[in-house]
Length: 186
Image (cartoon, rainbow, N blue to C red; front, side, top):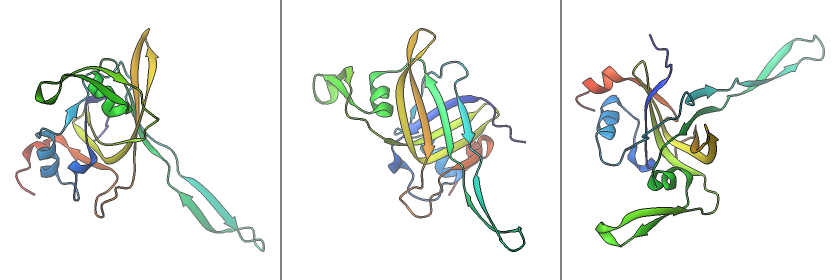
């Protein structure tokens, strides 16, 4: 039984990490790989996953007053959370802008961040719920902003799944963690 209540972990990666229809084995491989980053801290109970109600426009027959067709538009899906502690690299990853480096090459260290123009950052987002369900947005618009949370600046992130540019990839996937952990092949 799925309740998908609460969140245990949040991961993100570049959208190029998913190149075909996602399977449990592909998700296991992705999560074990070096390209995935984990969100280190979600402030309080700020995580939520919402799908707004679909909007429908009925068309009535003027002769008998009965509806003869309806146009339906799906509601928007969105995951929201606030990161309470984060690095400049994570801020750059999710908010955009540019990290400031000290040194060059492999020995460079990040020492700051500077704001750039507004960016609609695209990321692959993976959410693990408290009842061990993975929710995956392979191609998500991740808009972030700084917000005040308990007298400190937090990074508020809103991730909305979009239609991926690659044919055959869905905009949202759900997998049971036990199935992902047990997956042994494509």
